[in-house]
Structure formats: C-alpha cells, structure tokens
Image (cartoon, rainbow, N blue to C red; front, side):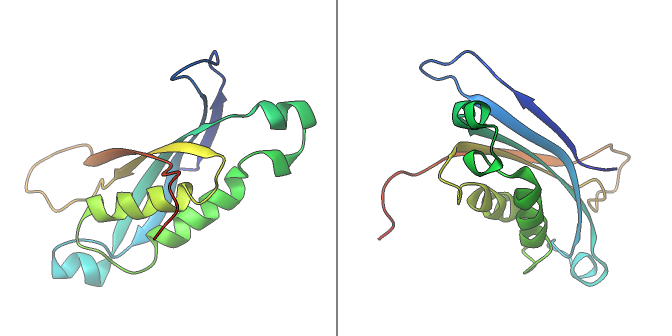
Length: 140
C-alpha cells in the first residue's frame, strides 16, 4: 500500500487552516510491549494531517515556501523505524514532534495504525490518533 497525498484548502479565518494530508505511510518496526514484537517486528501504518498556511506557496509556486511532504515522509519513516518503544502513544508523540519541527506546521494530527497487534480476536486494525499544536514558546 503506497502513501496517498491530498491537499485540502479551507476558507481562511479564525480556527481554519489549510490541510496537508499524507495517508498510508508503511513502516516496519520493532515496537511493542511483548518480547516477540521487539524481536520479530511488524508493520505500522502512519497517517498525517498537518495544518499549514499554503498561500505563500500557491503565490510563488515554489517548494521552498511550503512543507516538502516527500522529505517529511522520509523523516517520519526514519523516526518510526528507529529506537523501539513499548507504546503506540509514545510513537505517535515522536512522530508529531518530527512534523512540528517545520515552523510552518501550525498543528499535526498523527494516526498510528497497528494492524498486526497481538490481540486474541479477529479485528481489522488498532489505531491511535493524537493532535498536537506547534508550541510557539521557546524551549528552556
């Protein structure tokens, strides 16, 4: 399953932003609470929705004026496939941090899919979705 990218422009105003969405980013990683998850690894699928003001890029038609989603996907994939963690909550937080490194991203919504979660039942998917705003305050 390849990544699908869509951009959606909404009416500007208070509480409104343009949306950049990338869905279906497949990653193979070794996250999980159980030893066999860490040893064998499994597929995780990531969906991103970013609040981005795209007007400057639309006016200039220049990639430097917007979020380069190709580079972003590479950074997210690298973050998912590095340093195993126990919980998808920790993983989602890591991914949101990667997305918010670009100051043009006003907020990031991250969904982590764990379709092969070790559950003793028939199920389609396990997902966690978080939304994090850009923290404009300087780091101390």
